[in-house]
Image (tube, rainbow, N blue to C red; front, side, top):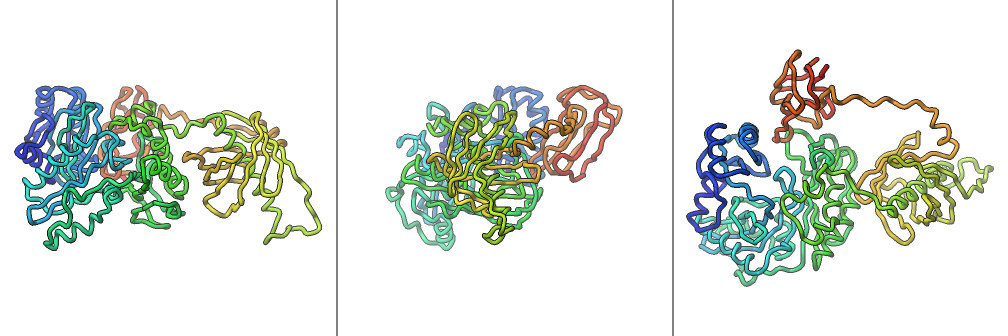
Length: 555
């Protein structure tokens, strides 16, 4: 069942609904085009031995089919040592819903309800939940019965997953069977109360299943977010590497589970999948599980590598997701121009400005003390107010700050806000209350020029806080000219150069492939930003490159 071609044939024989397509092995790009035309565009090109979104491409025409065949076969060979491909009809705008099955060596098999896995990027799951908001009991039962029929047909014994695509009319089609424990299995454990690993061990030992189908409940709701070492602002997540200089899981938040294989000081390299952890929350209902996930993401400390917490948080609070209006195209539909981070409302912007100004003053006051006492005992500071200038984005906001005990009153952007906290500036997490609204923030960085980065509502914002006098003088400081990026190609991620398609003196067109970078078993085509002549090539096939390394220059 680990072979997509063979598993599809077995599914057909077991009378499981399957996606129309070519059931054999595609030999070359020309045959891929012929088959795609016969099936009708769009089509999905998939690695027979694939998984995790690797070796998969959607093609809408002949050219994309040829390109997809090339990349999919190369990724498949690199990831699985098997470059065989299949082609099937691409079901546009579907949901990705899978059924957990459990079978023993005595002919018994159960379906343990479904998992909704529709939030994806590059055909890899990002957010999963159980149960699905979409399925009714009849569809759930029909999918479960087909999944069990397939498991019995192949005499499967263990925990496994049968994946389906489900269209808007609740028609479902077999996608593949994963004969192993899935990344997202914890959400099933949460709603059923079963320990799947324990059940797998029992089955492997030869024991019969302890449960009947009628014993399998749906209790509450569980959500899982895959926390990746990725930059979500680049194609919803290009890999990031580095050392985890600070790492703190949000295990103090109620009903939170974190499955991870790393710790503070671990290295994230280019050679493995960039997943840091699986973050799972559970609630008596979906709203409760999502609220706990929001809190858990705010309290997750990851420093040293880029991560996708900002994207995860935006997804789970988005109105469409909250309403259950999702599909595998959710991310490109909601963010057609790419993910840009959280868009602050007027009130949220003022809350951030007030918090940043209060942090600045709290730090100034701390710097005047040593071991809890004034650094200069005879100099007693009576200062209770500060005039500041806070830069955020393209805006400059005067801020008047006054101190009252452990609280600050901040007048900024036409509004007066009260900010209260314990002001433990040594902690990576800071709980602040702004006019009665509690927020958990993280100050990521700061420097002597007043520049600071604050994680607020999941997104990291860059600010600069200056005194009124310093702000007036700053206009005389020269600004560094921005680099002309249209004439150069830099690597957007760390990885290995697989192929270079140009040499000095070549003329390239806008959008033409320049080279291919492989990062964590995924291949990415680097293209020219404009038409021009190649001035210099700074890489060759086999080179290891870092993020922002110069690859090619144009005249």
